[in-house]
Image (cartoon, rainbow, N blue to C red):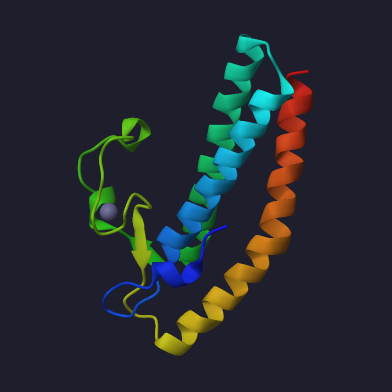
Amino acid sequence: MSDWKKFINVNGNFELPNYIYRTINELMKQSLDMGTLLSDDPHKLRAYKEQTKKLFKNKWNNLAQSLEFFGIIEECSCISSKHDFSNNKDIYCDVCKGARYIISSALSADEMREVSTFVNAAENIEVAEKLQKSLMKVLSDYR
Ligand SMILES: [Zn+2]
């Protein structure tokens, strides 16, 4: 799993959106790897991979939207540029590093610490469990 300390930038700010984004991506990669162990059928495998990617991307979008709603993160300027982010694999943004969100500039250091504590707890219990359940469902649908 991601080491959150690596996500403190040169200004001493915690890059929360990037951290969550990377964590979800790591979980996604692990799930994709698991899929290759579960089936030799290339059609099933492709369907599994597509579903898994969609599922994790949706999770990140939902999570980002809720964090944005509470003023914890805000959209990176790259999100409003004219790029179509459904095909954006190669468009790299230096500011958000692909997460498309940055930590809210209104957040204080203390608030940020509270948020990261919460996120860590949620990530360990709830998110992991929910993702696991969703994945099991995806797998059973393709069996
Ligand atoms: Zn960006």
